[in-house]
Length: 404
Ligand SMILES: Cc1cc2nc3c(=O)[nH]c(=O)nc-3n(C[C@H](O)[C@H](O)[C@H](O)COP(=O)(O)OP(=O)(O)OC[C@H]3O[C@@H](n4cnc5c(N)ncnc54)[C@H](O)[C@@H]3O)c2cc1C
Image (cartoon, rainbow, N blue to C red; front, top):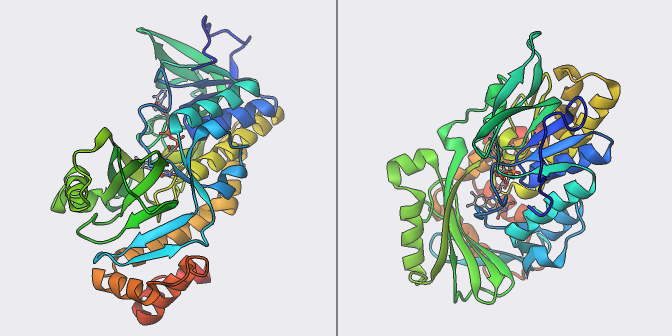
């Protein structure tokens, strides 16, 4: 990390920190930035030496979405994207330009850039610092975070802990928050970085179908200069019955003639549920993947994590100013998240569940109807509307999406 503290003392600042943020991914860095910018004494820590590496992400985001949270820097961006190309199970392609422009990021530099923004806002930053538990005072209240750094353990005193520790979050469990998910709500992903890839220029490609990736989809996200992220996600439930994400990915690569061009490989999990019912406890808040704030339909969690982090950071600073860090006060974060994105995530979850039950034949039939439609005229809504008109039972399944 560029702004790593060289000497570290638990008593620094006097009386400990107001807020310790565990995890310096997009959610954690935004939480630290907004808590510090609103007057809190903040420590942002991560167990890695270089958070953001190795990259476990397709790196795709919407340009308009990103601009809501930060001023995008050129070095964070590998390639600009002008739309999405959906490929049906039998290979019929449909282009959607109306989703708006996007980016394929360079996450190494992006994550680092966000950490720097947190540091500029006044947060202290510490890498190679592994949070291993919470310390409670004699009154049972959380008094700090136990941290192991370079072989020695110490306690960092603080009033609030923000767990932004990713999909395998432990902070929530330490605080007694239930973070477990149904197997069907967890996606196991595998991805190659490949060279010499001829993609449809300027489009992120999404491949659908039960054979391609049961319970998920495959993607090709171009990074410029012939580089691309090629990956897929398989629901953990399906993976147990029908083979792992890696097996599916290798078959997909072979089918597309991409084998033998791999430069890098990564695996990772994505929570495709709705947000946890409880994301705060006394002195504790969860943000990003730790709170399951991912869009369950797309598996995209960068922007939603940034929003969760921002709201958590702002609410934490507010609670510190008011001198009360109970779950009741921190619960304002939960309300704000639910209002801004939680409700939408719940809707996407129901749509995902309904679409997941569609047979490949329906996807093929729908793709054929829209094949050749001008990308500038085609919206996801038009596609869903057609699918649901032809499948009245699905409308019944997702009636709550529209009836609240
Ligand atoms: C293969 C794959 C492809 C994806 N593609 C996309 C995509 O194209 N677009 C998109 O929007 N999303 C994508 N996602 C999801 C996205 O990567 C995550 O949703 C996002 O990174 C979540 O951010 P976060 O800050 O919550 O967690 P993370 O980015 O996971 O950061 C968590 C941080 O916490 C640190 N940490 C964990 N435990 C501790 C501890 N005990 N002590 C200290 N530090 C700790 C970790 O080192 C890590 O740096 C993809 C995910 C995968 C796996």
